[in-house]
Image (tube, rainbow, N blue to C red):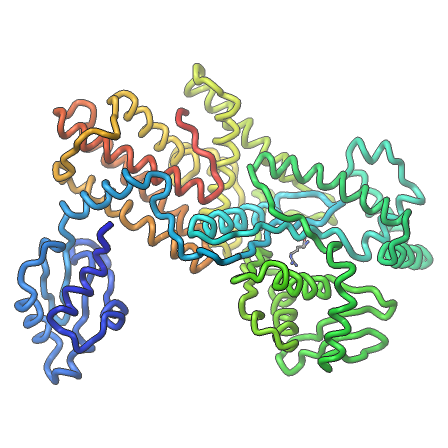
Length: 566
Ligand code: ARG
């Protein structure tokens, strides 16, 4: 595909090589609207070299450039040279490229031969998988897909919270009051009850706390009974989580959670000691981070047990050795900013230069219309229930709008789940947002169903118009403003994917796909397609096809499925 920005660079470089190509490229701007051109080159920088006013330089450059096949117009406005893309060339290059590459349009190999870890979701076992978990789960999955699309060997890791002192409590509680059958019928709720009861009782009875500590130590020491109970708790929890992952169509390459590092921490503690980083503090071992304006990292408690942060350090070292990652990405709520800053620092102090390749991708909070969620207050909203409710809602709408649709159940699932994912990825991740049902399931406005519906509409046009991908098509017939606007958006799609990767921000793609859908509907309303004369009809159907293809790819990168009919 023609890279018009590169052509701006070449054009300027050919007549004025006092700047190198990279410098020129950096100077190029995108004007606020297309009336001012597609690209603008400011001449301030050249003013020094030529000792002339930038306006004058712009005028002279314009004269020298003359006509250029890639640009229909090059204007100088004050100190700027404005470049207007040749629309015929744009149309031709975009349509040919997408028709050839299809689902791979926008894919790249910048990640070839590089391992990138995306750690996401990572819920705590024996605890509800609630609506708050949607963020890491869905943002992480999208980043994973984006990395793959750009050619990285991406590795999705679910760093399960399956270790720590709370399992001492759970084991102790189970041994006191637990009933296997009851738990197996409704694992998470029953385990949660046990956990809550234990905490309440322990408030009154110190001895219980000792019991919990005892059982966690036994677990760390490999006591058979403790390990067996823990393993069972992990299994039943994971079974529940997997129901949600199935609904969301998410898979992981590894479930190596915190417990996986239980035998890899001694080495870390030893290493920290050898490197002179550990200090004793009231019997515990810490890394002092005062110099970096942070509270100390607590590595080992007085009773010898390790902590969350210790496991994160061990995990990072293991991952470097095992995967030799290019980047190690953590999609974790912004509440844990300090935690990540602390242990990234510890790893850096240990002398690992790859500390800089560990990246925390934080995000804000999600709340429901009726207030925030809290596990402790018992107002838990299960993610599974939200997803099911979304599917129910979609099913109802389909019943109303299109009762004769085939595969209704499958499509209700794609639309309902897709709606939730789309809303989740619509705003920049760092913002808090309120989850609202009305907006999520609406077919109008900037929603998942709206974009999916646009895709289905495009599909039905292609069917009705007997679109044939092998037809010879005269793309130059596509000249209407609404056509050009749509084609421009399709042209920009690959760059948007790169931006989303660089900023680790799936919402760039969400927003762009909505823009494409809007532009498509505008085109659809203003340009007759099926009723146009044969050649124009063929050209417009090609545009419908490439638009549909890009929408599908874009939604796929968000982790959404895209029904052909709705
Ligand atoms: N299990 C933790 C929680 O639910 C999140 C884990 C985040 N990942 C990590 N490597 N610390 O809060």
